[in-house]
Length: 409
Image (tube, rainbow, N blue to C red; front, side, top):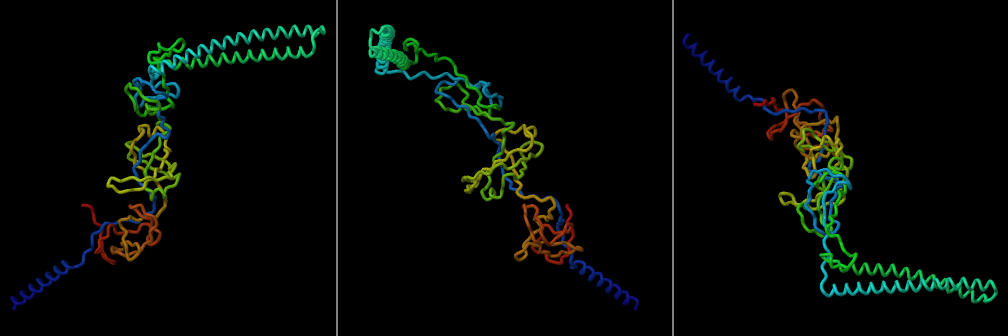
């Protein structure tokens, strides 16, 4: 009897343990999830793009005339002063040599000009003599008229002849100046490579160098022509700009982003190599877009946007012309926005929703979302500051599910 009772007790105990084990094994356990919190703080919506620095007013020094450029001694980075620093030297090119026919024509023109000058001088002498004679005759006629020995008509003719002679003298003098200019022009046409073939005072000092001064105060950005060479007029030699006070940032924005930006928007400049971020402001959005192909070959419409630095020059003294920077243009900002991590949001029917955690269980909560920057979203309605929400909700997660915080590791 005692043995039978013992078997019963053991059987009941074993059955109870088995039932409890099965119940424990199949009892619903809380789902481990990542949790976040709805907070109130600063939220920004930015347009992030890569930009480059540039000098707004870059001055390109060009050759003023055709000639031989001497070797440029200044280097990129050298400081120059407007109209004081000589940045290059030039030798003017010699005039084109004359062929035999043109040379003989030029010599003939010189001979003719010299003869015309001699004739003009002879006419000047004749006009001077005629003028002296007319004045002498006028004085004599006036004296005789005072003695009533000549008529009034003869006096008038003498006055007219004197004035005519004086006018002819002035004409002769002007002709002399004209003939001298014609002779100088004819002699100039004989100037050749050697210069010695030109007559008289038509010699040219072709070996005198022409100094080229810096067109602006700043630094040499780049030297385009360094070695000695012969260049035509208008060839660029070097580029000068003021990095300290004239540096700006140009960003090529997508046209769909550019329409969201306005002049005066605040800008944060990051990843430029310095220890701190820089600040700027949108100066201008160009009204003209242009087509550009991305690295993947996609055709895009881009718009140049100009950003002006607002920090002092000392904060960015390491930046130069053509440097790369990361630009974040702030198009919206709120210092007391109610925000939720964007990873907690999902679509429920046609609305946004989150799983709010209350007393260890999920609550499907519809929310109204305002602005979003891809990381956090502005909550307009549905949540309050301090609410716990599920991050990265799994597709199998449902309402009223027990959850616990997943711990790292």
